[in-house]
Length: 396
Image 1: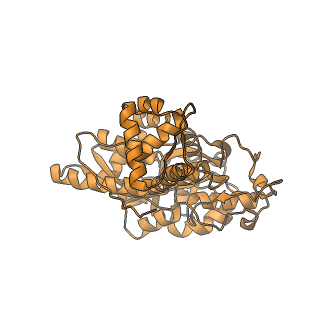
Image 2 (image 1 turned 60 degrees about the horizontal axis):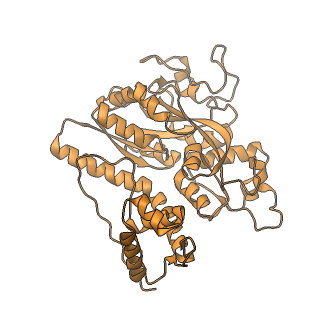
Image 3 (image 1 turned 90 degrees about the vertical axis):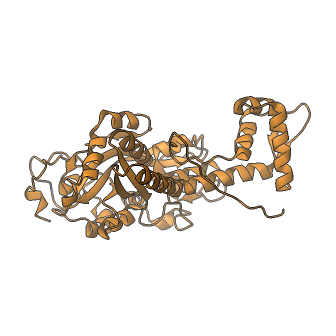
């Protein structure tokens, strides 16, 4: 097939875009045909005439030099194997690029906003990938006139960006467990200092195993990933990139289950850098299972086995708490509108949203000892009064 070029463009409109959806008419048509099984029903779904859809499909077949639809009289229209591969490959590529597209769009919005009205505050956040943060960005823009320049990175890389002064706020996630120090401690403690850094509560979300629809391999726990697949090829595990909070969580849970990374086929293979990219790989048949948040699994119609509820925190330097942009961020997190946004995401709930938290109390694995009397059960992130250093902030 002759090589074809790809051209990207963007435009300014009166209303902003939610998320980072990127559409192409070809893939909209292919998706409609696959879902509805006929040109006629596909045309109705996309709001076009049968003649238009038929003409567009023939046009794209000519452009690509390959048939896209199986045209059998009296039978439902079906995608050719080439069209099916093309559709899933585009979806996976688009899902991988979503965080980067969001960052580019946010930067262009910031430039436009500064040109039109310099009164809007701008806040740069490097954060581990999360589906709620784009909703927070939109909410803060609408209600607090705060423009959040959101850049996704692994938890470790996000904290490193904060340490290097590349952002004012960083986002990372950890399980509320006292016995997770062996994995999370070495990775995160060098980048967080009691008395110097302050946590801001954001969300609690469910992490678990994302599985192909119907769970054909019968996976019910992490330990099942290490057992041989009867009568079939080895299980294909889709991992997250090194330094991501999800990969740290996986390593911790593997240790708890008495397993090692070598027990998971695919652990050391190419990794994805977002929950959505892992889910897209599984939905397209490239993999069988991966770690991720419930909301990503539900988005792609995958099965989900919950393993852990974890806390997603934002963090900044203590001196930055009263920065006007950070104050607006905390106001957005503490608002009822933020709780309403979280209600739309499966597996999410507000957890001390907007509250300033004691770093040592919110991360119970920080000290390798039994908590002091009155600290409460493990994992309860306790709110800290503003300006109260407390004895826990100075005994690291």
